[in-house]
Length: 410
Image 1 (cartoon, rainbow, N blue to C red):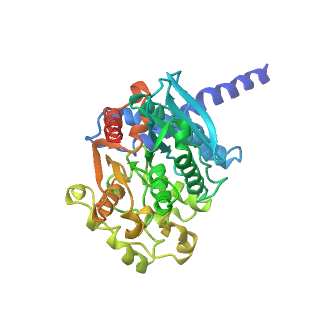
Image 2 (image 1 turned 30 degrees about the horizontal axis):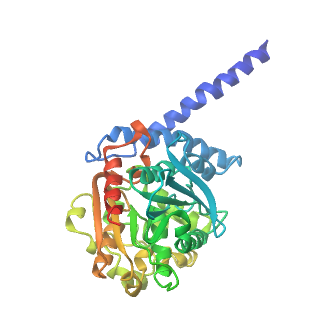
Image 3 (image 1 turned 120 degrees about the vertical axis):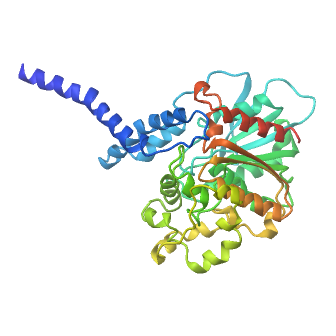
């Protein structure tokens, strides 16, 4: 009888007290730490979404320390979509483009002429994401415009270290440019798009694509809050929005180092730009500096930053961040001026906001036409919430409708 009481006490503990403790921990350490500024519409809902994520994330940290599973395995589960979408009136097919998995979304209605093509490269830091995480987004583009959408299922780190992601996307895009007609797409009307890291990969592979004489040239780029540099993590937007969900400053450094090196050692030093030697910092100030950010974006919460003590060991470990394929803001002018017209979406409450602003300036300085849409109430990841019903925000559809309007030019 005593054993039975002890058993029920254990069940009670694990089923009631442990979840209660985790929830309490989450509320204390995250719900009170994060802040959503008054300019974000439905800010409380954003807090609740992040709280839901933390309910899974906190136990994941414990499970990793116990050696049961990786923290990143839980993140992959969350990002890939725990709420699968329902049926839709589209033709959806999976195939391979030169060994790379792709998913093709097309209207079932036959068209007398070749359609526009949109290749979408998903975000997720090169570590998370896939077909499922961006299923709703790709469906939206295919349903709301006469567009054939191709989603690329590129390999993820750490199993496939950088630059496997860029290489796979380059192969898939090259294949599609060659064989677009086979899928009812006009090869002269192909647009490359991506969100977050996906936008970074678009800019990275385009450095090679513009040099190809044997392929049709891409018609335009669509970049949604892209990640574009890893040299300065103290630009105004990094300071102002470091604790605004859904992407914290600590997370992007943690994920970025893991993506690049397979571990996240030295993340605290990277946070203070200790991985960048002075000579390179001076060299790239012409492209990456708070001096190039318009004053209206520095009005609140920005303090001019003094870099921390330089770490030679950290620099050697992170050397590849200075490659233009990892930090596209370092692309040379001779390449950049060959890029096509670009649609650029930035969000006011996103740590990556200023990278977008710097990229906009670089493109325009090189004669590239830029259509810029800035969400005053936006945050990182807002566009990916399309199709999630009550989890959508007012800016979600506004952002995607602005992309549709851009696509319809071609």
